[in-house]
Image (tube, rainbow, N blue to C red; front, side, top):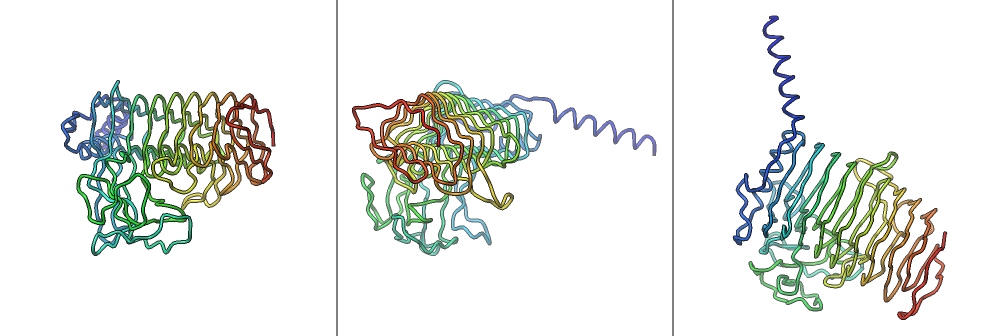
Length: 392
C-alpha cells in the first residue's frame, strides 16, 4: 500500500510539474498551412484543445501568411440553426502567449451564413435590418463565431496578429430582400461569399462574429493587433467587476467593424492606449455603430455588471458612423478617463448618459457634438478643433 501511495504522489507531482512547464507550439504542428487557400480551422481547434488540456502554460506561434479560418455546424438539440466555432478558444487557462509574425493574418473563410434563416430551407427570413422590434427565433440564428475567445483565464497575451472578418463588398452576398448599400443581392446561397440573412436583435444582425472576446478573465494584454471587418465587434470585453481585471489594449487598430470597434460590457481596470478605432458601421451598419461602446450588461454568471476604472489615452477615433464614444445604455459605468485623444465625428462624437458618473476628459481634440447627461454641449464645425477639459 505504501508503494502505491508513493507512486501516486510521484505521479501527481509529475503531472503538476508538466502542467506548469511552458511549452512552445506552432499552429503548423497541428496541420495548418498558410497561403494554400484551404481551411486551417481544424488545426487551430486541435491546437486550442492541446493548450486547454494543459491548463495553458504555452507560447503559441502563428507564422507569417494568411490562414483561412471559421466553421459552422448544426448541433443536435441546439436552439441555434448554425453555431460558429471558435478559432482559438482558451478556457480555464493561465500563462499563454498567442503571437504572430510580420504578415500573419487569420481570415474568415467564405461559404457560411450570418443572420436569420429558415432552418428547413436555408433561405433568408427576410427580416428587416432596421432598428425595430423583431420576432427573434433562436432556431433561425446562424452565427459565425469568434476568432479568439478567452474565457475564465488569466495572464494571457495576444500580439502581432491581423484578424480579418472578411466583410468586404466582393466577399459578402445579401440573401435578404432588404437591400444594403454596396453589397450584392442574390437570394440564393453563394458558396464563394459570406451570406447575410435576415436581421436578428433590436438592430441589424446582433449575432456572434467577433475578432476577440475576453470573458471573465484577467491580466490580459492585447498588443499590436488589428481586428477589422467583423459583423459585430472587433473586441468585446465582458468581465466581472468588483476587483481589478487588468485588461490592456495598446498599439492596436479596430476598423470597419459593424457594431463597435471595442465593446466594454463589464469589467474594471481597463486601459486602451495608442490605438485607432475607426469607421465602425461604414460597410455594414449594426446597432450602435460607434467606436467604443461602454454598455454594462448582465449575463448568466453576473446579474448586474458594471464598468469601472477605464482609461482611454493617446487614441485616434474617427469616421465611426454614430460617434466615437457611447456610454448611455445598459447598467452603471464610472471612473472613465479620456485623455490626449483625437476624437472626430461628422455627427455626435461623445455621448455620456445619466447612469454614467465621474467621466473625465482631459486635453482631447474634439470634432463633433458632445452630449453629457442628455444635455447637448455644442457641435464643433468640421474645420475647428476643441481641446476638451470637461468633467461631468
